[in-house]
Length: 188
Length: 295
Image 1 (cartoon, rainbow over the protein chains, first blue to last red):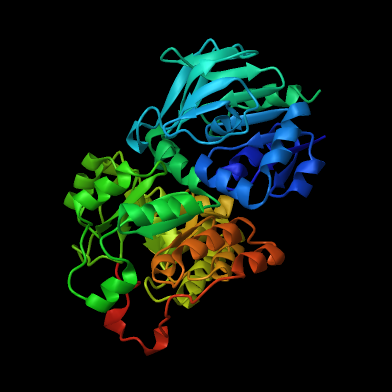
Image 2 (cartoon, one colour):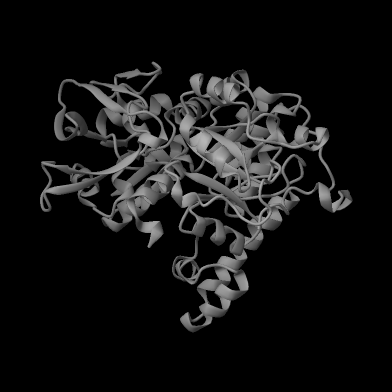
C-alpha cells in the first residue's frame, strides 16, 4: 500500500514524515504518473491558489477528480479547500469531491494563527487533541455524507466524509498520529 | 527551548506552508495580481525592487503604508514586507498593519550597525538573511522563524546565492559528524548559541525552514537553488525587471515545483524573453554589496 502526498507546493514534507511515522510507505506526487501509482492521497497545507495553478499547468485536475471518485483523499487546510464543492473569499475552482462550503483565511491573517486544544474529537485515547491553525479556513456548511468529528468555537474543523476526510488545521505539525492513523484505516 | 514553544511553532508553521513555493517581490497591487495569478505562494511588498535601489542609491526604507495596504487588500496569499536591519519601530508598524511576515532585510539601508531586531518580542513572524550557519543561528536565537540565504540582491547573478547555500549546507553537514564534546568549540567558532549548534548536530538542518534569495533570474536558477538545498525561493528583481514578467513568473513557479526534472525545467524555459540585466559581483565595489549588511 502506497500513500501519495501531493507535492506541488506546501508542507508535503511534514505530511510525508507523519505518514512514515505512522508506518506508511509514501510517494511525493507531482505528476499524473505518480498519481496512478498510489492507493490514497494527502493534499497538504500551503497556498490553494498556487496548487490550483500548478494542477492547471500539468493537467492534474481531471486525474485528481477521477482518483477521488474511487480512492481516499485527506485534505488539510489548503487541501480541504481544494476538495470542497464551494469556496468563498474569494470564490475559486475546486475538485468538488465533497459536499462542503469553505471560506478561505476566515480567522484573519497570520496574527490570528494559533495552537489550540480540541475536546470531543471521536478518536481513541487522550480526550485532548492539539490543533495548529495557520491562516486557516472555516467550514461554513457540511453537506451530505459529512460527519463532524471535532469543532473549534462551534465550527467544524475535522470532518469524515466516508471515503475522504478534511481538517482545517495541521495534524502534520503535531506529534499526535491519531488523525493520520484514522485516514490510513480507510485504506484497509 | 524557544523553538518548541507554541508561539514559535505558529510562526514556523506559516513558513512550512510556503515550502516548495516562490515568493515574489512586488511594488504595487497590479504586480501582486500578476504574481498571484502566476502561482506565487506569497508576495513581498516593497517600495523599489533591489536593482532599482542599487541604481538610484539613497536610503531605502520600509515601503509606504498605502502601498502595502493596497497589496494586502488585493491578494489572498500571504503578504510580507521589509524593515531595515535593527529598526524595531518599523517592525512594530508592520505588525500593527498585520502583515503576515516581516523580512528584516539587508536590501534596505540598515538602521542599526550592531544589533538586529529582538524578534522574540513580536507576535508576527520574521525572516532574516544569512551567508553562513553562524549568521543563521544568531538570527534564529533572536527569534527569526524562517531563514533565507542572502545571495546578492538585485544583481541578477546567482553566484552569491550558490556560495551562501553551499556554505550553510556544508557547515551543517560537518556538525553532524562531530562528537558532543566538540560542539562547544563549534559554538565559539560559529558565534552561535550552543543549544542551536546541538540542534543542527542532531538533526542535520536548521530548526526553521531554509529558503534561498538574491540573484535568481531564470527557471534554471530556481532549480539550482532547490537542488542545492533551498526549500523555497525568493525572486526579487528577476521577474519585474525582465522583458516578460507574466511568462517568467509562471516559468519560475513551474521549474521550482519540478526542479529535479530536467525536462520540466526545459519546458518552463521555452518561450522566455530576456532575463534581467546581470552584474558581475567581482567588478562591484565592496560598498555596493548588500550581503555584508547584518552582523
